[in-house]
Image 1 (cartoon, rainbow, N blue to C red):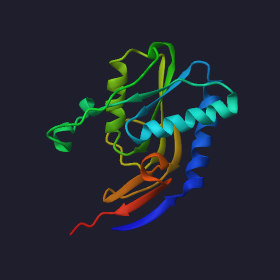
Image 2 (cartoon, rainbow, N blue to C red):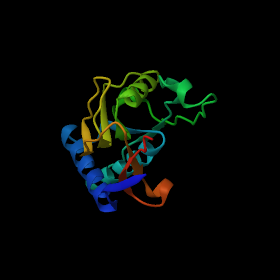
Image 3 (cartoon, one colour):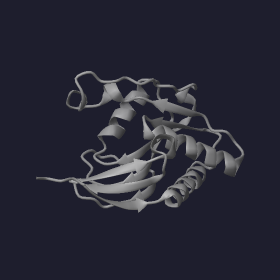
Length: 180
C-alpha cells in the first residue's frame, strides 16, 4: 500500500491546541463543559484537548470515555463476537455541555452511534463534535463543530491517525488500498 503523511507530530499538536482554543471561545469559557472521547483514539485526543484547556485556562475539565460497540449499525459486519470496552463517564452529563471527540469523521455513522450511546446516559444541555480529521463522504447529516484538518479523500483511501499512546508516534497518514 502506498502511504503519505498529511500531518506530522507538530501538526497534530497545533491542531489540538487550536481546537482547545476554539472550544474555550465558542463556549465562553470551560466551566460548563466536559469532554468525552470515543474509544479508542478519541479518548487520547480528548485527554490531550483537556490538558491544553487546563494549560490555557487553569481549569481542569472532566473527561470521559465512551464505548459505542453495541450502538454501531454495522456490528455484525465488524465481528461475530464484538469486544466490549468500558464506558467511563465519572460525572453527570446532564450538567455539562459535552464535547464528543473522535479521530476521523467519515460517513458519520460512528458519531451517530456515539450520540445514541451518550443520550442513553442522560440528556446534556448541548453536544458538540470535535474531530482531528474530517475526510468527507458523509452518509448522515452530521457536521463537526471543531476540526483539526479537512482532508479531501477518495473512498478507496484509508486515513489512519497515529498516536504516541498506542502507536509510539503521532501523525496522520493516508493509504491507498489496493483494489486488485
